[in-house]
Image (cartoon, rainbow, N blue to C red; front, side):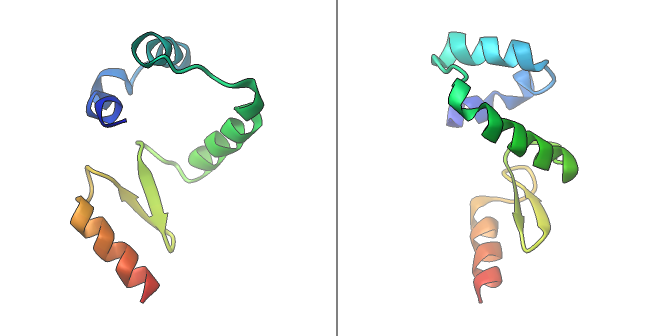
Length: 84
């Protein structure tokens, strides 16, 4: 996963077909038919929330783009504050 996110700038502008081919060729990952409905609901939510990059997390409605918008320590602090 670290490698995939480290190379995100190389594949993030590609179309979904190209990304699927790259995931299969470089990482041996393949789409699982049983997960298509779940994938579609996640995509719909990402579109609704206007997510621009992955990973993006929402804490109490606050959008946080990790690691570009916050580092690991900052993310921990955000979670701790939300739980306080």
